[in-house]
Length: 232
Image (cartoon, rainbow, N blue to C red; front, side, top):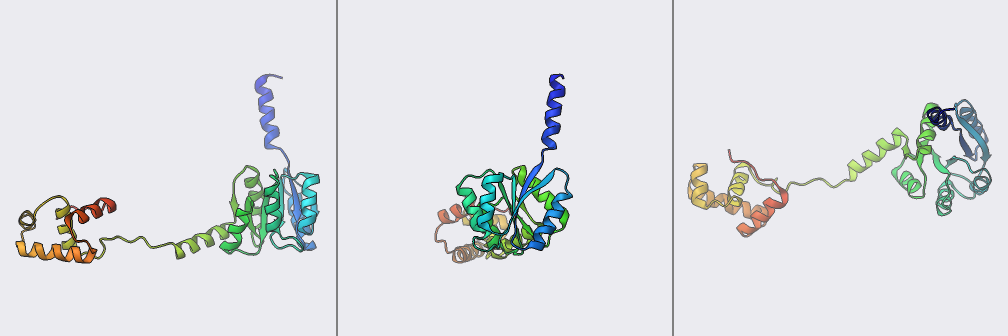
């Protein structure tokens, strides 16, 4: 066999490598359903089952599965604690957490404890295979519903972006821009085609609204916010 053929064969074998999955789920019927799904997947093999966290960890030691498909709620030792212990032991097995909870708190804790993926029990059966192959590749996987929920929570609680110059009128912003460009009051009045008194009034209002008391302060604000406008 040529070197190219050998390499091609190696790639083929790698692509066809069987993903060995350990099921850790305390409900017998759900576990049976999951096993039936895994048995239908090409290149996936269910190598063991456990009904609680303690037995699940014991089977990880003996079976060395590629992926542990584990319920987050288990008797004795829950899935989160089991995942944490596996991380402490530097286990090579990937944890794909299975849960009915979509809240960001559960997801964040699962990922921080070492889970590589978070799959909702309501997910379509086809999503299970996608999730398994993702975590085996070394990727993180979150059910789309979970991702959307986390994004909604982030947008809901993220601090609003505040423009420090939003309190100014368009005319006041124009005066602000001309001031930081170095123009004096008379030059600003000429460019804006208004009286010196009007410019002085605008400048006073700008400083009061921004709580700034000198031109240097206005300049520093303009540089930090990068909000200079072009006079119209």
